[in-house]
Amino acid sequence: MVIIFKHLNPILIKMAMTIIVLVLVMSVAYNYPLWTPIGIGILVAAVSYSVGDLYILKISNNVIASLADLFIATWLIWIIGPLFQGLGIPFFVAFISALLITGGEWFFHKYMVNYRKNIHHNPKYPN
Image (cartoon, rainbow, N blue to C red):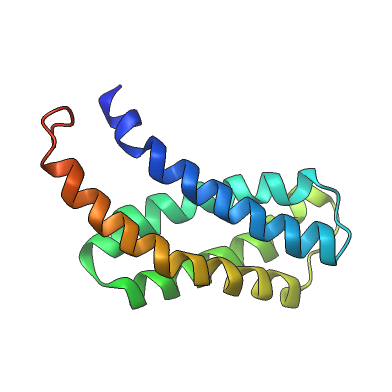
């Protein structure tokens, strides 16, 4: 249970950031139904957090982790995203969305590095 709370704040921030970007790009700009970017946003945030933030960022740096997040987000939106919609999502829409998400990831990774430092020094959350 402690592990869940340890990751709750960062994953909620990441989901909010990802969903906002996808709603603005996909629903506002390209008229996708609202539930499509919300579903894709949850998926992108979960995969990107577990792969990019918990693994890649830990063993590399912000640039590498951000590039990994760009790839992960583009791929998930473009290839897996149509499962939510039933229609294809153009590569351009996926890539633009992923670029905007990656811009936020740059700052999110800085937050994660500081968050990890603080969480490791907190006796409520053992390693």
